[in-house]
Image (tube, rainbow, N blue to C red; front, side, top):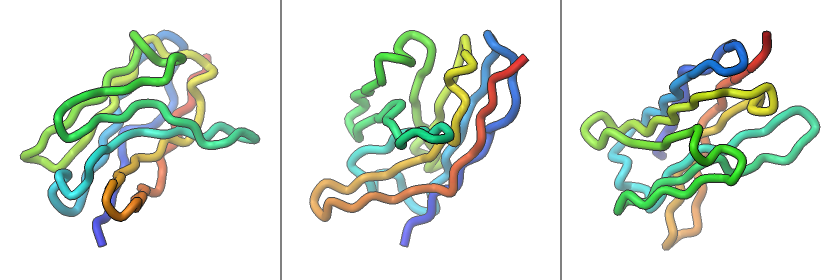
Length: 117
Protein backbone atom coordinates (compact mmCIF):
# COMPACT_ATOMS: atom_id res chain seq x y z
CA UNK A 1 0.00 0.00 0.00
CA UNK A 2 1.45 3.35 -1.04
CA UNK A 3 1.27 6.05 1.61
CA UNK A 4 0.86 9.77 0.93
CA UNK A 5 2.02 12.27 3.55
CA UNK A 6 1.27 15.99 3.28
CA UNK A 7 3.16 18.82 4.92
CA UNK A 8 3.50 22.57 4.67
CA UNK A 9 0.14 23.80 5.91
CA UNK A 10 -0.27 26.58 8.41
CA UNK A 11 -1.60 30.03 9.14
CA UNK A 12 -0.93 32.78 6.61
CA UNK A 13 -2.24 36.30 6.07
CA UNK A 14 -4.34 37.18 3.03
CA UNK A 15 -2.08 37.78 0.05
CA UNK A 16 0.58 35.46 1.42
CA UNK A 17 2.02 32.22 0.08
CA UNK A 18 2.44 28.64 1.18
CA UNK A 19 3.89 25.55 -0.45
CA UNK A 20 2.36 22.18 0.31
CA UNK A 21 4.29 18.97 -0.20
CA UNK A 22 3.01 15.42 -0.67
CA UNK A 23 5.58 12.67 -0.26
CA UNK A 24 4.74 9.21 -1.59
CA UNK A 25 6.20 6.05 -0.07
CA UNK A 26 6.86 4.68 -3.57
CA UNK A 27 7.38 6.04 -7.06
CA UNK A 28 4.74 8.60 -7.97
CA UNK A 29 4.50 6.87 -11.36
CA UNK A 30 2.52 4.25 -9.43
CA UNK A 31 -0.31 6.72 -10.03
CA UNK A 32 -1.69 7.98 -13.33
CA UNK A 33 -2.49 11.34 -11.85
CA UNK A 34 -1.69 13.08 -8.61
CA UNK A 35 -3.43 16.07 -7.23
CA UNK A 36 -4.70 18.23 -4.44
CA UNK A 37 -8.22 18.52 -3.09
CA UNK A 38 -9.57 20.61 -0.26
CA UNK A 39 -12.46 20.56 2.15
CA UNK A 40 -13.70 23.58 4.03
CA UNK A 41 -15.96 23.25 7.12
CA UNK A 42 -19.50 22.38 6.10
CA UNK A 43 -18.55 21.90 2.45
CA UNK A 44 -17.81 18.95 0.21
CA UNK A 45 -14.30 18.04 -0.82
CA UNK A 46 -13.38 19.78 -4.06
CA UNK A 47 -10.65 19.49 -6.65
CA UNK A 48 -7.89 22.09 -6.48
CA UNK A 49 -5.33 20.86 -9.02
CA UNK A 50 -4.20 17.65 -10.68
CA UNK A 51 -1.15 16.66 -12.69
CA UNK A 52 -0.92 13.72 -15.08
CA UNK A 53 2.16 11.57 -15.59
CA UNK A 54 2.80 13.40 -18.87
CA UNK A 55 2.75 16.73 -17.03
CA UNK A 56 -0.66 18.02 -17.98
CA UNK A 57 -2.03 20.19 -15.16
CA UNK A 58 -5.63 20.95 -14.43
CA UNK A 59 -6.84 23.64 -12.04
CA UNK A 60 -10.08 24.66 -10.45
CA UNK A 61 -11.23 28.02 -11.80
CA UNK A 62 -11.01 29.50 -8.30
CA UNK A 63 -7.23 28.95 -8.11
CA UNK A 64 -6.11 29.47 -11.71
CA UNK A 65 -3.28 31.97 -11.91
CA UNK A 66 -2.58 31.72 -8.18
CA UNK A 67 -1.72 28.05 -7.54
CA UNK A 68 0.82 25.87 -9.31
CA UNK A 69 1.10 22.08 -9.09
CA UNK A 70 4.45 20.45 -9.78
CA UNK A 71 6.41 17.35 -8.89
CA UNK A 72 9.91 16.07 -8.25
CA UNK A 73 10.07 12.51 -9.56
CA UNK A 74 13.40 11.80 -7.87
CA UNK A 75 11.90 12.70 -4.49
CA UNK A 76 8.51 11.05 -5.17
CA UNK A 77 6.95 14.33 -4.12
CA UNK A 78 4.18 16.54 -5.50
CA UNK A 79 3.94 20.20 -4.57
CA UNK A 80 1.25 22.85 -4.53
CA UNK A 81 2.57 26.39 -4.59
CA UNK A 82 -0.17 28.72 -3.37
CA UNK A 83 0.21 32.46 -3.92
CA UNK A 84 -2.11 35.40 -3.34
CA UNK A 85 -4.00 33.38 -0.76
CA UNK A 86 -7.52 34.43 0.16
CA UNK A 87 -9.62 33.67 3.26
CA UNK A 88 -11.82 31.45 1.08
CA UNK A 89 -8.80 29.20 0.48
CA UNK A 90 -9.02 28.13 4.12
CA UNK A 91 -9.55 24.36 4.21
CA UNK A 92 -7.94 21.03 4.90
CA UNK A 93 -5.88 20.15 1.85
CA UNK A 94 -5.58 16.51 0.82
CA UNK A 95 -3.10 14.89 -1.49
CA UNK A 96 -4.56 12.37 -3.93
CA UNK A 97 -3.16 9.67 -6.16
CA UNK A 98 -5.36 7.96 -8.73
CA UNK A 99 -4.87 4.77 -10.71
CA UNK A 100 -7.01 4.60 -13.84
CA UNK A 101 -6.93 0.86 -14.47
CA UNK A 102 -8.16 -0.11 -11.01
CA UNK A 103 -10.15 3.08 -10.40
CA UNK A 104 -8.32 3.41 -7.08
CA UNK A 105 -7.96 6.60 -5.08
CA UNK A 106 -5.24 7.06 -2.47
CA UNK A 107 -5.46 9.89 0.05
CA UNK A 108 -3.14 11.55 2.49
CA UNK A 109 -4.21 12.53 6.00
CA UNK A 110 -4.66 16.19 5.13
CA UNK A 111 -2.98 19.42 6.16
CA UNK A 112 -4.75 22.51 7.46
CA UNK A 113 -4.38 25.80 5.62
CA UNK A 114 -5.82 28.87 7.31
CA UNK A 115 -5.81 32.27 5.62
CA UNK A 116 -6.63 34.98 8.11
CA UNK A 117 -5.42 38.34 9.31
